[in-house]
Amino acid sequence: MKKLIEVKNVVKTFDSQVVLKGISLDIYENEFVTLLGPSGCGKTTLLRIIAGFLDPDEGHVIMDGEDIAAIPAYKRDVNTVFQHYALFPHLDVYNNIAFGLKIKKQPKDIIDQKVMRMISLVGLEGFEHRDVTSMSGGQQQRVAIARALVNEPKVLLLDESLSALDKNLRKEMQLELKEIQREVGITFIFVTHDQEEALTMSDKIVIMKDGEIEQIGTPAQVYNEPINEYCARFIGDSNIIDGIMKRDRLVSFDDVDYECVDYGFEANEAVDIMIRPEDVDIVPRNHGLLNGEVKSVLFKGVHYEVIVETSSGTSKTVTMHVTANHDVENPEAGEKISASSFYMDLEDVENLTDSEVIARANAQAWNAEDEFVSLSKVEYSLKPEVGTYPCTFGTSAGTEITININVVKPQVIEDASNEEVIQAFDFYKTVDDIRESIALDTDLIRWADAYAWSTEDDSRVEIWDVKYDFDDENISEGTYSVTFSTQGREIKLETTDTIEEGQRIGLKWNPEDIHVMRKMG
Image (cartoon, rainbow, N blue to C red):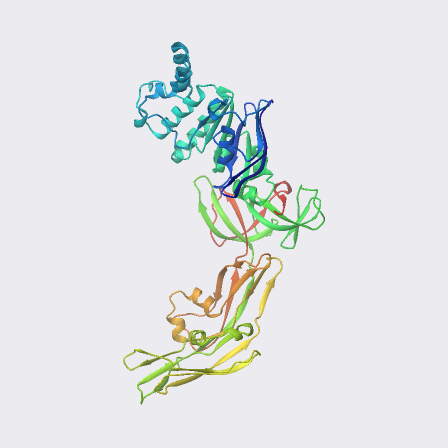
């Protein structure tokens, strides 16, 4: 195929922000090219530079071997269909399409011949004299496409031109647009953030991120062989797993080795592994590559989307000390006071404040009318050492209670396979605290100061599960175990078989279904 457009090292800056960072791209005759990426990635800016609406700060745009930087937009052999079509509301369908030809002063019979051909091409026969403002969005888009194509440009640029349509019409127009491109035989450059549109219509997809091109390829190439995690997540659903490339055609994750077809990596190189949901098969437990438990099943019309947990998350078990409600009463003052002993991290001692001590101990005082009474006394003396220290709370009327502050070193659990660390502390609570809790799991996380983070980047990891074996409505004094866990390894798959939550199954895939990618950055 003949090369039609060459974009060479194009740079564009707006208000000191670099929007395009040295873009280079070759576009060929009769290609349907899609610029795909999220908002702000630079795809529309690149389209407008090709159209001539913007000038690059650096670089060149060459068309048919000629640098077109100095050629104004209206003289370029390029036409554009905008997101909102920009039809002339005072003109009917025929005259909207004929407008460019009339400006060029072409003969009336030639205009009529070309306009009627375009009307037939876009399926608007019988609508020649229809008021465009009374037409549907899909019909208006057909008029806009016909108006652009009637001038017989070498390139048609489409800027998110399907985004204003409803879902069903959008799907219909995707197919029609590709058919129109085949019929007229010219190059289309289409801008979208919709992956389905890109896969449906394109000969070539250009995936962009932050003003740079991440990957160029056919729909099959970018779907089956994404270059990195960003491209894998942007095109289709995918399971992305941290792994180690042991050697050519052998990759490992969760301490298990799997055969694959990829090669050319360093021995024991850290990699990202992609497995598409449709490539994962359900088999009986212990008959696949790994076992799991079904966590959720979502019906998607023609198939079920299933989430399977294949390994547990990082866990930490603590002891909850449950005490009775031992309020201290001062009959002379008509007051009661209560507080609970608590555990705290040795590292937090230095910055501890009175208000935090009151909060951690859940200290409070009240009178006979159940009105809260201020705590005027908060006395404790902590050392930056592991130990047990008394703490006394009191009111101005002399009502007092003493509890213990247990200073401990944080006991963390590190899980190398999950690249996570979790910590939590033993804690004290009263029977009433447990019974009156509205969101017990959330309160248990807060009371134990349970916290997890990633060893890869120190980002916070959500506590996903809280397990305990007591009945919160009938709990009594004693000690109880509470286990906090992060989310385990989850695999998404698609199946037409009926499956239920909680079912324990096996999962299987073929070596060619694993795609290994280099880590980004």
